[in-house]
Length: 373
Image (cartoon, rainbow, N blue to C red; front, side, top):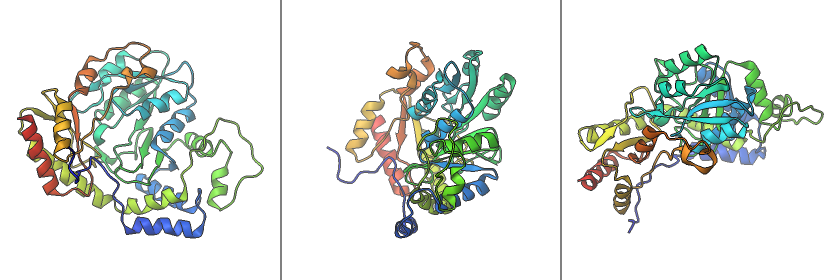
């Protein structure tokens, strides 16, 4: 029986400022894409010190980034199998084949050695996924991409607010895509962003998010609409709304608060669980990332039993993620990825969000240790 009080795996953390901002949009009765979206993009552009374009989801961000690169049927994208299905769906939505790769078990980011083995003359992009906010061997990935003429689209959905080698994630490199859904490091309710210095890619994304209507972004930001226009490329209804952006603006202001809190809670987990022989922790530098999820590896492999026992104690847990190469849509090659498949059965995500208390972390750890014993 599940107790009445449940420690949630994740949740939105919303205050009066966000609610007031949304009411301001509602009172103004301009709910679509307008000045709030422009303001949110300006905030992100200053944060990254390079242009950002907002869309309605992180999945849309990945999809539009790939489409803007001009890839299509017959092309391939290297991506780790162990990621949320959104990564694969964004790739296949362009008509491109996602090529599933192994992960490094210590970081659960793409194994660059395995990716190199899967390189073909059809490979056009590599998509590193910043799992649990960690970036893995990003320098090696960019070196590999440069050597082989590949574009890099970073799935940075987990990594907003983090740093790699002293630089903000998204402030360097080729293209980075972020998610602002309800439980991410900051939220806009739903939403995402693409960040890059490639102006050709940016303009294609700006148009494609508004059904391919050329230069419609400028009209929207001035409170107008395009009535006489041209469309040259496939577009989608992927633009962000003012309601979303209003939440995102207020959440962005709280990033330092959220970052400090998430780091503190993750460090408490590590202090409590670091000496437990039956648990292995990911190789992450918590001082340089904003932990989106807290994932452990259970050496016993009895994850599902542990999940059930913890739920009986009022502790919700998760599994990030089911490998994509075993899903019906993507298993046409009947590929075996033994490292990923073995690792999947050991992964367990513990509750992590800024509303948790230190006593919650201590309770979770004590009950987890009891279950393991």
